[in-house]
Image 1 (spheres, rainbow, N blue to C red):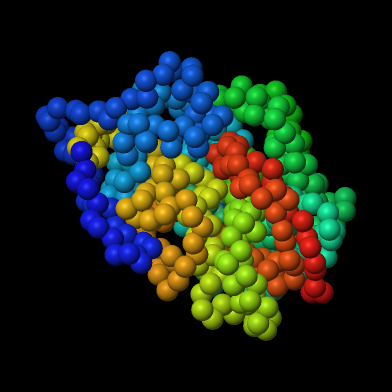
Image 2 (cartoon, protein in one colour):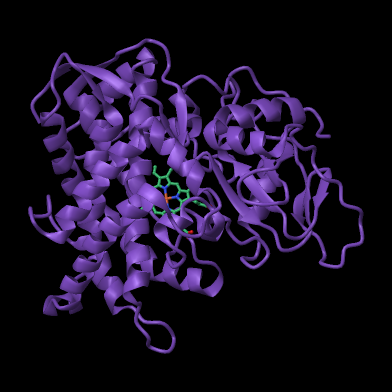
Length: 476
Ligand code: HEM
C-alpha cells in the first residue's frame, strides 16, 4: 500500500500525492498479476449502482477498498479497474496510443454519436480527425467568439424573471448551444426559423429537456451495452438525423462552402490520404458529437459554478466585485474568475470518469493488471484527494489563485492525445458567461442545502438544474 502522504504546511491549499509507480510492463512480463480488490456485490447490483448512482458508488468503494479497486459493470465481462492516483493517470495519458486506447468507443455515447467521430474513433483514424478539427478549436481561434458569446449571454439574461425561481442548467444550455451551433454552421445569432439548422437546435433543446426526466434514466439503462440505439432514443435520433442530413446536403450544394471557415465547411473539404472525402454518415457522426459534447458539458459546468457560489458567500461577493469593477474588456486582473472556474471544475467535474483499455500488462502502484484490462480514471476521486486538495469538499477558488492546475491532478478535460478538443472554447465561454452573470445579476439559492449531483449518461449534473432566484438584475 502507499506510504502516508507528506505533511502539508498549514496554509497549503494544494499538495502532492506520494509517488505510486505506474506504466506499461513488457508484453512478455512474467511477473504474477496482483489485481486490485473487487467490489463485493452481485454483478447486476454493481451495474445498477454504477449506472444510477455512480458518484456515491465511487466514493463508497474508494473509502472501503482504497484508491485503486475493481468493479464488474457496464462495459465488460471482465472487471473494470478504477484508479484515482495522479501517477496512474499520468501513465495512461502519456502512453503510446496503441498501448492505452480510449474507452469512448465502447461507452454509452457510441449508440448516439456513432462509431466515426473524433470522440469514438481509435488509432490513425482518430488522429486524422483530431488534426483536422484542432485549428478551429485552438485558443486564439476561439477568442474571436468572445463578443458573440457575450451577446448571446446578454440576450439570455434579459429573459430571466426577477423574484422567481429559475433553473440555471437549461438557461446556460440555451447560451452554449447557440455558441456551438454558430461555430459549427457559421451562423451568426439564431439560425432562421424553418431552416434545418434551426430544427437541429430546437430538437436538441427539446431532447435535453426530456433527458432530465426520471424515465429517461430507464431508457438509458435499457440501451446499455447496445451497439445501436433502440426505442425512444432511436426515434429521437432518426428525427435529428433527418435535419442533420438536410444541413449537409444544403451545404454540399452551396458554392460558397469552398471559402467558408466554419467547421462544417472545413469537414466537407477534408479528405483522407487517398483523397476520399467524408461520407454523409461520417459527417453526421462528427457534427452530432461536436454539438452534444460542445454544449451540455459547458452549460452544466456553469450551472455548477453558480450552484456553488450562491452557497459560498465570500467567493461569490469577490466574484461580483471583480466582474463589476472592470470595463467590458473581460478583464480578470487578479485571476479570480479563472480560479473560480478551476475550482468549480475540480469540485464538480461534469464528466466524472474517463477510461482507457490497456493492450499491455500495466503496473498501477502495488498492483499489476493483464493486457485487455479496462482502466477508468475517476476524475471525481482524483479531485477529492485530501493529500492533493486539503479540505477537498470545501469550495475554495483561492486554491488556484496564481497557481496553474496540475496536468495529472486537475483533469476535468481528460488528457494526452484524447484531451478535450473543445477545452479552450469551454474555458472562453465560462469566462465570458460567468463574468456577465456576476456583473448583471444577484442570485440566491432556492434551497440553502447543496444541490445533489445526478448522473446522466456520462455526465454529472445538478439534480434540480441548479435552482436559483434572481434577486435583482442590471441592464446589459
Ligand atoms: C466544461 C466543458 C467540457 C468538459 C468538462 C469536457 C470534458 C471532456 C472530457 C473529460 C473528454 C475526454 C477526455 C479524455 O478521455 O482524456 C472530452 C473529450 C472531447 N470533448 Fe470535451 N468537454 C467540455 C467541452 C467541450 C466543448 C465545448 C467541445 C466542443 C466541440 C468539446 C468536444 C470534445 C471532443 C470532440 C472530445 C473528444 C476528443 C478526442 O477523443 O480526441 N468538449 N471532453
